[in-house]
Image (tube, rainbow, N blue to C red; front, side, top):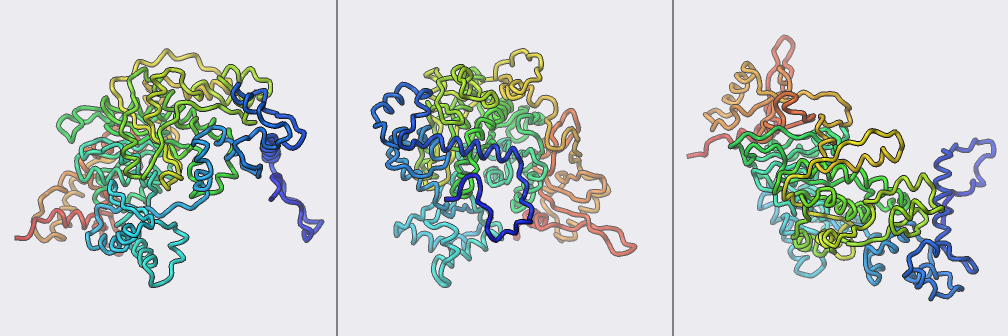
Length: 616
């Protein structure tokens, strides 16, 4: 095995070549991590270093073990072998029963099977071409199965096996079919776990939907397709401006359905409230919140080892501790933006209960009964993923040396935990003591790789049953690092995290919202439409064309729900809009001495074809 602290200098390296400088902090962190790993292994004659920090049950179990046994600290292990901190931590956390650990550990190290879903544009003949082979594989019991809930398939092979398929075989034909479908936008390659949040929410065509952390956009496209051209809208938000533009590029394949999409750039925990929906328009009824919210928060991603094996090497205990406050802030803000009776899906691609059940328990406690965990997500997960596990109602809290602590007070009183490490822990990370909260946590859903042949994933479906309680009075600001981290414990309403305009990656810079195209431009567009159509259209495009500038470099088509979120002026609309609607016209430069002209985009041609009256 490669030493944790680096390799020795090669004998072929010239002695006069200067060694590459390394950050002192990086070297210190590697030494600290090496010490943590080395402290877990008991060689012959060593004492049990964590016995003083373990619970009574663990002390009894350790006492029964032979002192000469090097595996005394880990009685579950058949034999000691080099382990990553990841394996040791999750064995102690008991995310799966002891008898399932071998299958769970092996599945984490296997590549993901190929999974995809059809878009609404996929024609029947295209589907039939590939499903002839897929149906035969499913009938033969190879492991290929249909995902009826999302109109997709999960294959029995991974991308490496499909890449090596022999030319002329069924696998090779499926590979070419998948490539053609992906390039033409007829299918979307998406993991089963990623399909679960949108599938559990039950989005209807008139709903106002928010995707709080949307990039790269696979969930967003799934949500937009579920609107099916109704009067609703999907607001896809991301903190990073670069990821927002990636999101715009990803959703370009939606074509005319992008008319129901608005892309915004805000910090999710400071997401401003959208403009109130006017009565009579597409299900809003004057509401200023959202009917459905996907809250797929930033996380450590340690459930993605099947896609990113490097997670095993970069994982450490502190990662989840740093994410927990931000995750709670975002979830609280999501509940504040949710309409009464609406649903919020909190999800992560993490296995750690500190990022999953602990956040949900803290959220339920802070909301004071205004939010409840909805049942039914397990049935959706079982149908879609083929198997799942309930949420955890209790879990141990471990420090960097993997010693257990009963509560925050005992951790802060421990002399073995450095002060810098103590600052990362919050009382909300420990399991709840109230039986009612523990019962609700069991309604959450965990996707485990060995049960569902997917990545590790967590989902909690939350329903808002009444308005959130008023936030407590603000405490005077403090300058200590602990106070900065405690900012995640915002008031129940979360208004302090978004009432001011929603800071984003671009600071306080305002954005230019959309407005109806000027009359002169509208007349030119109407002339282009008549020239292209050659006959009268139904007029759905008229009055629904918008641009960001008077020059109208790009003209987009919007649904009524999209218009309400992407038009107007501050302070009535505080959303920082990156893009909205479906582009239908773009201004093109004319030849020398000639004026510019408007050209139809591919989406515009499709919309115009839908505008034409049916043939007699």
